[in-house]
Structures are given as structure tokens and as C-alpha cells.
Length: 430
Image (tube, rainbow, N blue to C red; front, side):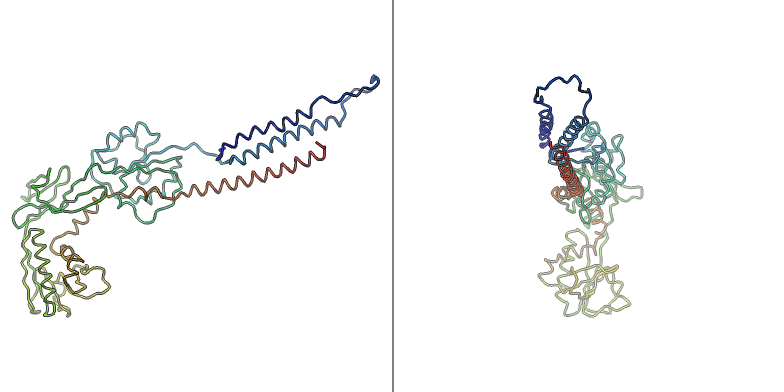
């Protein structure tokens, strides 16, 4: 039993009113002097007993009426409330971060119940393996929130990294009261995701920089990376790693040969493509030899590009890495099509820069798909706290409905008792 407006319980002092009325009716009666009553039989009249019983019934009805009226105003809730635990959940990424080892140790000694924020919400009897670093397998946090109701908890506190990539789909309605606390990365971290030997013989690495609000990828020479280590594997090839990260093989440098065919009306398009390829050559510090031709009978070799309104011969079509094929509905000027790419629009001075031609050509000359996949797995940008705390609660609406129905029943009881009290008082004229 609980009350939503306990201040009205002061109204229970009103129970003094029916008690006062009852005691007032018991005041000393008026004495009438009569003659001798020696010969009157000694017994209690039925009417006297009926009057006293009626007074007790009225006292009970009036007291219960005041009690129900006060409980109705105080918002009485008769729903039984089971004893529930106050749970604390820890995200796997927090548990794996050595920067929070001390925090987790102290948390385990103070909270009532500690669980892992993972499928099944397993108990954490001791502290997990915090010596491991890196991100755990991604979870769908919105789907996890839907499962919180199964914990049957009075309150839930979640400590999480709240990575943006772990929130997918629509936000669900929440049925369990909870508080989500974001533990940010304490510093920007670096990860080597790919390494290769440049044309000048230097080791260059694709490095992903991760933080709470941003993620970026840069190419950095291994000599400029603090904590980077080089090692010669048993096969004789070089390996590189950063800090406690994994060893990655260093890819050997090879000169890339490009065959660029373009028809006469695509001369400017070919010029823009050659300039973009030269920019990639300088950016990656690799050698790219471009051979241009207008003779469609010359067989393509190496990385081949076809720029013409007419399609390439069927016998050599699969050997072209990039083919022009106009598509006014395409979202980009270069789109992937099977094992190759398609140039969907003519090139000019504007869309070369606005549509990032160099960036779109980069996957043709370097395997950046693997780089991008590793980068996405390291994304540590966090969800803004306002987007987490604004989740609506189904429990709140249900509670308001329960209170409304309980209030209706109580008011009906008050009205019924009032009518019964008036009928009894009228019949006995009290």
C-alpha cells in the first residue's frame, strides 16, 4: 500500500469528529423525578439495546467514511510491491578498459547487485578480465533496453561507453526506470589498421584515431608513430604493431600499371582522371604508370579504365576496373558494380572537387575496403546523452492508469457508505 499524495493523510485527524459525536450522544440524560419504582421489573429494554447498537454502527460507518475519503485524496494504491533489487550494469567495453579498473573494483564493493550489460545480463561475481583491451563485439543497445524488464528491478544504473555504432533502429519505450551513465574514452587512441612499403622505401601506416566525438584516418610513417615496433617474421617479411596491438604484415611495394582509354569527346574527362591518379600517387607515395590511348583495339593491361559513350568490347569488358556508364539517378559519380566500378557522370571542374573524385578512385589503387572495415570496428564516438535520457516510459503511463482506476473505486465506496450512513441515521433519527 502506497500513497501518491501523503500530505492529505493529515485528514485522518477527522476521525475525531464521529468519535466526538458518539461521545456527545452518551452525555448524561435528563433526570425525571417519579414515585417509587420498587415494583418495576429489572431488565434492559430491547429499544435501549437497539439504540446502543445503532450508535456503534453509525460510529463505524462515519469513521470508515472519513478514512476512505482521506485515502482517496491521498492517492491510495493497493498494488503490492515486491522487494526488488537495485541493479548496476557494466558495459563490456568498460570492463575491458584498463583505465577503469580501479573504478570497477570500488563499484563491485559498494553496489547491491552487479551484472554485465550483455545478452542474459550475467552476474559479475568478481571483476572480469580487464587486462584485455580493444572493443568487444558490437551490441544493439536499443534491443538490450527492451530486455531490461526481465530483470524485475526497482532501479537500474548502466555504465557504458555508449558507442554511436551500437545504437540502431528506433528508440524503444522504456518500462523499467533506469539511469544511463556514459564513461568516455580518457584520451584519443591510435590504431594501425594497414601498413605498406612506399615507393621511397619507407614504411607507411593507415592509422585510425578514435575519440568520443570524432574518428579519422591518416597515413603516417612508422618512424613518426610513438610506440610503433617493426619486426621481421619467420618468412622474411616485415611486421608492424602499435603498443599492445596485433602484428600486421607490411605489404611490399609494386608499381601499378594503368591503361586509360578515352574517345575524342572524353579528352577532358581523361585529363581530370590522370590528375586524380597523380594525386593518389603522391598521397600514397606509390608508383603509378598511366598509359593513355584512343585506340580501342589495344588490349587493356593492369588497371584499365574505359571512357567512352560506346561500351567496351564484350571480350574485354570484365578486364576494366572503371567504365563510363551514365546514370542520372546515381548518388555518386563513381559507384561499385560487381568487381569493378562505374563512372556515372561526365567530369568537370566542379564535380571533381565537390564529389571527391580522388577519394572515390582510391579503392581502385589500394585495398581501402579492409581499412574502412577495421576503422568502423574501432569507432568510439558516443551517443549524445540527451538522446538516451529522452526515452519515454511505458511504466509511467501504466502507473497513471492504475491510479485512475483505484481512485474511481474509492470514490464509489465513499458515495455508497455516505448513502448507507444517511439511511441508518434517518431511520434511528440520529
